[in-house]
Image 1: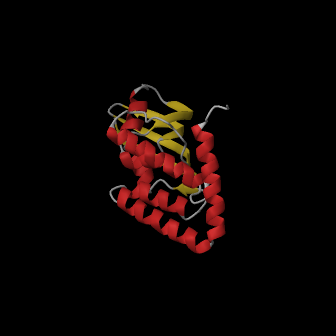
Image 2: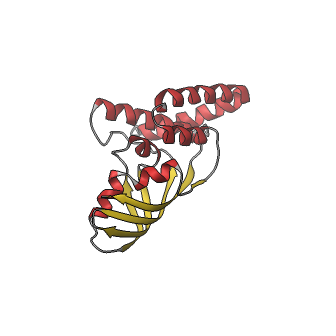
Image 3: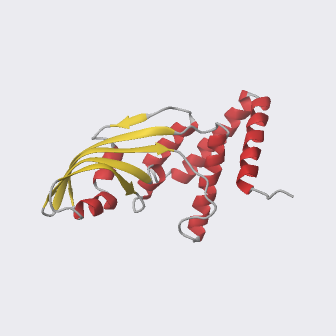
Length: 187
């Protein structure tokens, strides 16, 4: 008897669901996407950056670049995670594809989470300057267990897995995000 592989079973189920959606026609897809938009509004109403990026994914739009004056750029510049990276350096440094994990700011964590940071970081006493970019792919992955084994962690993992299946069924689109950052912030 072959071993049961739950992930392959779910992917097969997702592919079967994709075929069923194709058979039901565009109106069913529109109804599902409308429900997804409603869920996005309910879940991300307090997180405008996350709301806009989830909406973009549901709408099937492609890659996006944000300028230095955008909300997301300003949020990254003032994030605890960038301050933590800046605090490790006493001299100017050129960062190239450094990983930055957003967890403190839930709006950024829901949008970027684990991103790539490149650019010039210049410490200036109690402040720092950064001129560079953050790059990420807006997508979801399958995980059995959340990073934090709490009720909230399990709920987020469940939602992430549902979004992963929606991506597999082509109800959501993954896309590249580039954010230009230039400015000074406090350490």
